[in-house]
Every structure is written in structure tokens, then in C-alpha cells.
Length: 376
Image 1 (cartoon, rainbow, N blue to C red):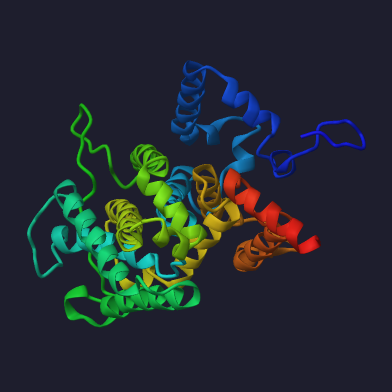
Image 2 (image 1 turned 90 degrees about the vertical axis):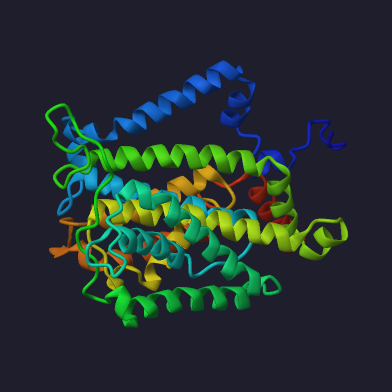
């Protein structure tokens, strides 16, 4: 488009919101082989992160206090996994879910019930044997939650999903077979041993757990990315933008909403499975409402509807509070005020970057168009 007054190319929305940024342009022009090589390089660096903490000049600046660096990385891995799952529900399908911690709890408790010697089932299963059952149960729980809420939207949907999380928490507290605060001990770790018969997944080093979590994240990213560009992803987008218009165009909104809840729940269940396998102990005190709010804040702050944004947001909501351990502000340990500091950070990001730190191209375009309408 040409501006008639200046005879210069008129800036379109792609330039205003960053979709036409030089980086994205150069990335799109790279050959497929170069893009794959770059992604493999990033993945390799991610697998080497546990060793970054020992690099002079870099390690002391990023390593957390009060929790060892590999354990902090493992925490980041399951937060990122939860952010990716919630991004399917909130970012792609536009369904506000405040009870996502419920799926995390279902996955963790499923492993505990089938593997812990404290469980009334007492099956004696290994961690690996319980994984597919736990994922199946969380997927079913996603369908059970999604089915009665199909006609709800916005605040009403948020209230119902919040109620689901509270049902799970109260059941864990009150039901005798869930053992409340006593919890489940003796949950087995993932299998595997070294040449000297020492276990790969032990209690001293969280690095193998981080590598396992990172591998699951890579698999989830590939699956979600393919869904995003499939008929399912396009249907989610249509539902998020305008459900009535999507129904008029023949989109089966009931089916694809259930898909979103089920897939998001299964990914959240993976996070719970990893958490239970690493901790070896589980009780009801772990699954608080704040957990869901943190994950949702990470998705929104990172960039709703965008996989890199969900990864960044999930990493930040896990790493920043841990990094504040041992940091003193005006002679006071900042960890005591970690939620206050983190909340202030979120407010600053939302004021100056409402589309998120790494927004999706479509989401950035929507916000730019709304801002233009508001100033017109």
C-alpha cells in the first residue's frame, strides 16, 4: 500500500505489532535445514543447562540459593509443561480455566494410588507402569469437566473450573483413601540404572529428572504444534474468536472444546506424574489454588496462544521466586516478599506489554486493531 501524500510504502499492522520484525523475516527466509539445525542447537543447549551453574562468571548469577540448580531446572520443566497444557485450553480454544491444578493433582495422585505401599490398592506397580493409567485418568477427568461446561463462557466457566480444583483438593483432604496431610510415601522413581547398578533417577541429583522433563516437553511441543496447524487447531481458533460464527460455519464446537479440555488435562497430568516420581512423597498441601493462578499468569505474561511464550512464561513463574531465595533488599530476605515482587513484575509486563513477552502473531494483531479502534 502507498501513502498518497508521501509516496512511501504505508506501514501495515505487521510492522506495528512486530509480526514483520527483522528476526521473523530472516527466520522465515532460512532454508528448512538451517531452521532444523538452529532448533537442534537450542535443544542441545537446553540439555546442557544443568552444567551452566558451574561456569565461572555465569553460574553465580543464575544459580538459586536454598535449592540446588538441577532441582530448580526440574521445577521449571514441569511448570513449562503445565503452561503448555493450559495454553491449549486458554490460548488456543479461549476457555478460561482457573482449576488447572486439578489435572496436575489427578496425574500425581493416580501414580501415588497405584504405586505407593501406603495406598489401599497396594498394586506394587512401578512408576512406568502407572504412567499410562495416570494420563488416561487425567484425560477422562478433562472430558468430565468439559462436558457440563460446554455452554458456559468467561466468568461462569472460570467459576466452574475453580470448583473442580476445589473438589479435588477437598477430596484429597477428606477422603480416607487419599490420606490427606499424611500423604503417600514410597512412591517409586522412574526406572533405570547405571553400569554399577546405581539408579539413574535417585534422590541426590535432579539432573536426570530435568532431562526426562525436557524430553517430554519436546514431544509435547511437536504434538501441540501439529495440532495448531491442523483442522483441530483452526477450529479452536474459530471458537476463540467467535463461537456463534464458528457454529454457523459448521464447526462442531462441542467436539473441539472437549478436545481442548482433554488434551490440556493430559499434558497437565504428565506434569503431575513427573512431580510424583521425583518427590517420592505426596500430600494434599501441594495442590493449592495459587498453583493454578501462577500457571495462568505465566501463560498470559509469556504470550497466550504462542508456544514460545508459554515456555518463557512457565519458566519465569518457576525460576523468579526460586531466584529470590537469599537475595536481600534493604537488609531483608526478598524471598519473604517473592509473591509481592513477582506480582509487581506481572503488572509492569501487562501495562507495557499487554500482548505478552512473546506474543503470537495473531494475538498481537488483534490487540493492535483494538488499540486502533479505541483511539479512533
